[in-house]
Amino acid sequence: MKIRVIGGGLAGPEAALTAARLGCEVDLYEMRAMVDGKPRLTPAHQTTDFGELVCSNSLKSESPNTAPWLLKQEMRRGASALLRLADASAVPAGHALAVDRVEFSRLISEAISAEPLIRVVREEVTTLAPDPVYALSILATGPLTSDALSREIERLTGSGHLAFYDSISPIVDAESIDMSRVYMAARWDKGTADYINCPMDRVEFDRFLDALLEAEAAEAKEWEKLDYFEGCLPIEVLARRGRDTLRFGPMKPVGLRDPRTGKTPWAVVQLRKENLRADSYNLVGFQNHLKFGEQARVLRLIPGLENARFLRYGQIHRNTYICAPALLDENLRLRKQPRILFAGQLSGVEGYTESIASGLLAGIYAAALARGEEPTPVPRSTALGSLVHYITHADPKDFQPVNITFDLLEPLEEELRKKIRDKKERHRIVCERALAAFDAWWVAIPHPAAELRR
Ligand SMILES: Cc1cc2nc3c(=O)[nH]c(=O)nc-3n(C[C@H](O)[C@H](O)[C@H](O)COP(=O)(O)OP(=O)(O)OC[C@H]3O[C@@H](n4cnc5c(N)ncnc54)[C@H](O)[C@@H]3O)c2cc1C
Image (cartoon, rainbow, N blue to C red; front, side, top):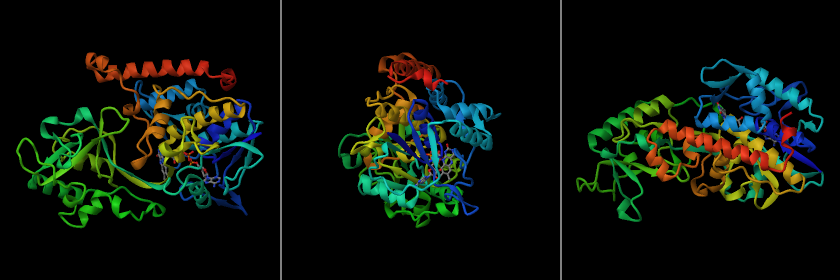
């Protein structure tokens, strides 16, 4: 029986090529097509090509021992088809892997046409009802999944499990917070004092607010303009509603007396430790749509964050993705309907490389399942495994898609961390450990690895 791969962006072609090279027959569905001489596209895509990069042409850092580098190294060792084609279409970009997007797409199309086990179907898929032709389906329809299929995914996964936009708060590196300026406390002392509180007096708040009101917003495409939910408004929108609105919202100080002064500050920014991310804190309720440089400038006015290193900036953009922690198992299968796997942005990863990475895994897992074997999940200590671990174990309540960053990786044991003070050295060890774990997994999994190396 065949595997159906839905989506001809990044994750879909990677999954299709991987499964086909492992001996499976694949039908690859893509709705973008020429219809009556005119292209039928999504709001972000400009071509009908496979593997179109909708915005920048960068697959991020190639600097050794960074998280994006590690992910790519694992993918290279795992014989990722699209990463090989990205390497083949690379253009000079300093320490990053950037590609000639036209050449990249051309090479992907060529690889798909040359693969006898893949049949391309230029059609929109609108139903996920069981089909006797297909043993398995891999859904990789991305952030702009068509409306009809979105409705079908909602039907299948239950209401509230499909989101249509990201609303991301910034994340800071814990080591860059000036702990002498902040205090730990829980509101009204309820529960444990897990929050870092950055207190502001009136002068500091006014300065922050003025900077926020002046900050430049990121550009939004017409189709991306969002009707924000009241409960999830960007801070700059709240700020424009009145000078005190933030103090009654995400910067509410009540119940957060500063133990050092015995007084309640004028305003407070709360930082919450990130679930499943080591050494990083999320600025609670600080989702925003400002340019990254502007965020750095404004957020560094918060006491304690003067020298903050941002691991992720706030963002709000159109994105269709499932609540993976509530729905997927560690083999990227829908728990309730194991004949369906998810990959790419729709599965809750974020970014070109991450989407390709999850396509690679989905292809390997689907091929194992098609042979009647239970797939062996990639180890948690790898970058690939960390991504999957995050999307399948994060708190489903406020799940947001993730890029690969170092804090997703399994941290070193406490003793080793204490011994090795140099962060770069710690990262080097984590990378070395991840690559060793990847290699051990790769040789042990029961698939014809030699086939994938073609
Ligand atoms: C505007 C925008 C800009 C982005 N910029 C960047 C960036 O600069 N860098 C970065 O790393 N990431 C970026 N991303 C995030 C993400 O990395 C990309 O969206 C990436 O292309 C996701 O890969 P994918 O394979 O999951 O989805 P896609 O590449 O979008 O592929 C999904 C495919 O499925 C098809 N499809 C949808 N519905 C159906 C259906 N019902 N039947 C058949 N086919 C269907 C679509 O036509 C599309 O070809 C951006 C996202 C958006 C929306």
